[in-house]
Length: 338
Ligand SMILES: [Zn+2]
Image (cartoon, rainbow, N blue to C red; front, side, top):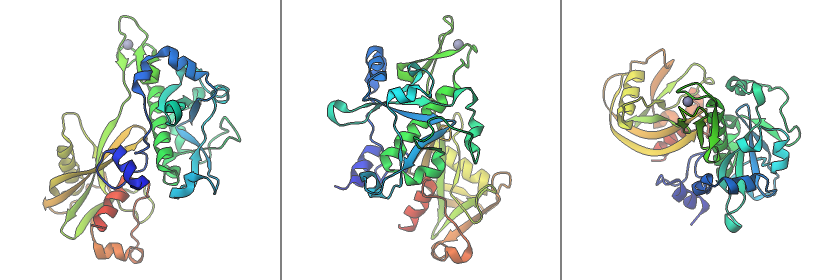
């Protein structure tokens, strides 16, 4: 059995390989989150490792050519810090979030995520082209996972996505949404509890489900284009699932709203954590059963049917596919390879 097949089993999606940011196989060791003494010991254990997140960026370095992580074509790897190094640049270790155990002897090392953003770490900073001076200068580069994700190994990409998502959630929930009082971390950081005794509400990490769908009609498929994308890029249709809606209802509604096409035979394909900041992409294929193209201009600048000949001569016609880091690319390629 190949590594890819083993990872597929871990991902549980029944397909031949997990999507980027999934399939890391980390032991989340959820039972240990409720053991404050064990967690406290691991926070000061020199063998533990800390995954830093700074202004929604992840710390990576170029992978050496001769290390095993490049065997799958990856060219970056995460920089994991000993607790003493991380403590010099981050919030107090008590606020670090326990991610799990990385395997190996006795379950392996404890991994934590730490927010290094300080007071200025707002979400918009992640979009800056040239970020201001980051902490831990010289340890690596803080890069946006959207860009570097395709150049990371499966385990590494999954670990960094997990750390980015939970650090960002924790940072955005420092105050109780019910009463406005400060919250404090519990359960290794996987719960934020309101510090007000009369309120005391527990806030849990948020994951926002979004459907993403390749619509087919015989030998052609429907792709749309947003104006913010690079020239020529067309991708599958997508949108958030709304409260009170099933996944298949969301697929039918989104496709109808964005393109005017009616779909049926909605089939689940695979999923992908998309921590920008908290989405879970649920990938589907659906077949056209009616309707004509009528593009919703507030959502898309264009939507078209492409057949297999178009894909074969895509350079000629100026068609570009979404990046390899995204599940949309996977949905398209799986259909093309049939
Ligand atoms: Zn409260």
